[in-house]
Every structure is written in structure tokens, then in C-alpha cells.
Length: 245
Image 1 (tube, rainbow, N blue to C red):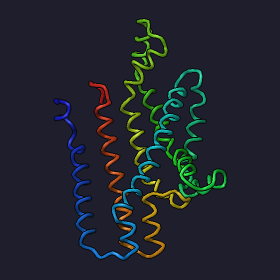
Image 2: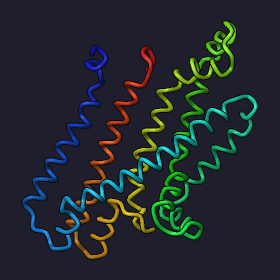
Image 3: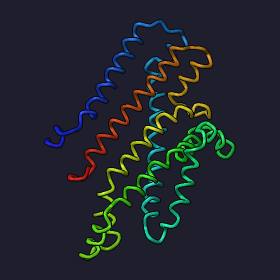
Image 4: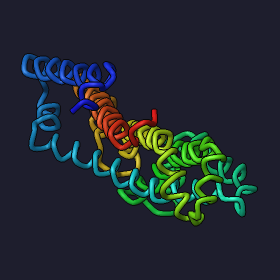
């Protein structure tokens, strides 16, 4: 309870902005005149499926990135593989340096269109923050602490699990939260390769010159990104061991 009361003020400000933004959008939506196409796309029965598809795309991509990037980051901080660190980071950096749309389109030549291709493209695009933060988080652990744990008889694996990873948790989770926000925004581009997402509202609004549909898509993506960022921040705060900031 004490920890709950000591949460920083910015943790409370973000949900306030989300609520204000959502209420403002609902008020605007209920008082504006929509075309038949806009009504069909924004009615709840259709919109909830679009939101679900966007969240599914983001979550699946994030899980895969975490499963790949964190173990890879751990491996690259071990003495036997440390020399490969610059090569791995540079390869991951290529994925993020490339334009997201171009990356997704390139994968369609290999995998075709649809959900699977979008996931692969998003994973490549978002792997760098988690990989880099895992490496940085483990590197910043005081080596005297590691040596002390080995000195009292801890094995290398036990030292990693009980000493190094807990101390690196804040930095690693910050990377995961960054990747999540990147994926929420980038997932809108999946509509160009046949995967449904909130980007469908935006592209339809642009193609058919329906500004209200375009604005709705943009607002909903922004609110979703803020919500996921806030949830990630809460998880980061509560998952960080006490005494580590």
C-alpha cells in the first residue's frame, strides 16, 4: 500500500489524459454527422474487431520480440559471446533504420500478405530497444557484486538469475515498454499488406477523403499507445525489486 501511494505523479497524469481524450472523442462522435461509410466503420460491432486485431498484432509481436531479444541480450553479455555484441546490435539497428512500410512490403515478397507477414516485419522493426536495453542493463551491474556472489559459491547461472537480472530489470522493462509503444504505432502500417488494424481506418479515410474517419483512427491509435505505455509503466514500477530505481 505504501508503494502504491508513492507512485510518481506522471503515472497518474497519463491515465487522466487518456480519460479526457476518450471522453472528448465520445462527445465529438455523438455530436457529429457521419457518412454511411464512416458509420459502418465506426459502429462498435465493427470497431471492436478492428481494435482487437490491432491489439492482437501488437501483443503477438511483442511476445516474440521479448522471447528473442532478452535471451539474445543475455547471451551477448557473457564472456564467450561478448565479441559478437557490436555485430548483433548493428544487425538489429538495420531493422529499425529501414522505413517501416518498406520493411513490411519487402517481407510480402517472401511471405505474402496478411497477419503473419505483419508480425515478422514488426518483430524485426522493434527488436533493437529490448536487445540494447538488456545488454545495457546487464553491463551496468556492478562487477564487484557479481564477483561477491561468485565468491559465496553461486554458480554462473544462479548469479545471473538472482543477482544480475534483478538489478537489470528496470532498464530491460523500459526497453520492453519502448518496443510496445513503437509496435502500437507501427502496426497501423500493416493495413498496406492486408492485415487488419486501426490503420485501416486511417487509410480508408485518406483514400475516400473521409477526414472524420481519418481523425478517428489517429485518435484511437494515440489513445491505445498511451494506454499501453501507462500499463507498461505500472508493470515496470511494480516488477522492479524494492530498493532499485
